[in-house]
Length: 319
Length: 291
Image (cartoon, rainbow over all chains, first blue to last red; front, side, top):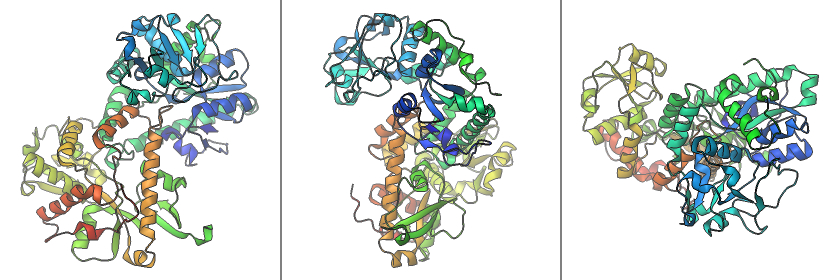
């Protein structure tokens, strides 16, 4: 199993929770793109964290022999990951239309969610963006295998191979940038800021209003393994739940400061109030609104040719 | 160095993220083969103990242990004071004369909280009635009204228990900006005899603890996916950086001098020690580390 070094998976990584009937070897790999590339190019792992967009798109094309469990190793609100060049004078989301917008990878889950959120919450037509794809803080060569393209028309160009988006943004050569990494120019350049400086409040309001906590990654299992041993889906799901439960229990011992954050108590109290006990729900039913939005965005953004029944992309487990 | 030549040591310490790299082996202390054990494990040469206990023991002349200036547990105070909503406690002065439950093994926490009540809120230590309780019974006794207040429960709470200061984080921030004090609850100690036999050891352990902490904070900063199930983890870190600068959780004496000096002052004020406490003589010297 390859997955990030996450608190919710810690008990699986250190063996204190063992999925029934499975001798699990957990590789804690921090870079999600590395895991995705090793899954797509060499099918390296039996169980792995996988980009939700990549999984659903490739699975819908029947070119990815893995099946997801409703376990979501990575989720993030991304209102804070829309950056603007101050020279472009963008203060309202709709002013992004017609602008040059940098993107780490057009197909990345963070980008799908940001486009969807801008559309649903702010009436932005992201089809009218001119997209510029490339590395964020370092130049990145294109990768034909990994760079999934949507089926519809989209104005998408690669940036020069010796440039990065952070530098282009600082220089005003693009007007905005969205992705999952902060550009270095946010701190290094006075010309770069966030579209939503009050993103934290907005993300909180978005959750309260929509019930959506964007799912970035799913956990997938090799299809052949699942066909031979159908019980492993249930076993893994239960183990992931138990591992997460232990991590939440540990996080809640705020008086013992398990986490090196001086204001941990206040942070945990906020999460408990907002998410009612489980800020990181697994299972289909508990993520209905989020999963429905994810499926709809895949279709609207032309990663799949017709609406999908998103539930059918997950192995059935007792929730 | 071969594994054989490494000094095998056991360390009893809480399972904090900042020591995780020592437990997993991602960070190794030079010359040491270290295993981590729960805080109450026996036969551990390196132990996490309460700061107040250590300072008081040293002041009494107990020379069995020496501390390495590593502080695994620290916590601000305003979020650690809890009251029963029907006990008639609306502010700090109302604590006077009330029964306040304190966990028996958490005297350092009580020392800091009483200190904050005295120095920040003018509530004299003598006016507080502290009642020793089993840690596990604190919340239930407070909810049942057997005590009116308690120190050191966890957040959030459920009625009838509530924090005395709902705005505790803002208050803690203000006090830190004013005083530079981030209360230290525990410290690592080892036997003086071990320190005498291996004069290189303390610094080796110090460096490993420092590196493990940096590793942990570095891991938390990764924005590609959240390490911890706090949806706003990255913002918490931004806020932490703004308030604390490079290191929110400093080890070594110098960056903690104001905090340690205040701890010694509180022990005197609260009658735990008499006379001066010389901070510099209570910790193994750290010479190679300069920041």
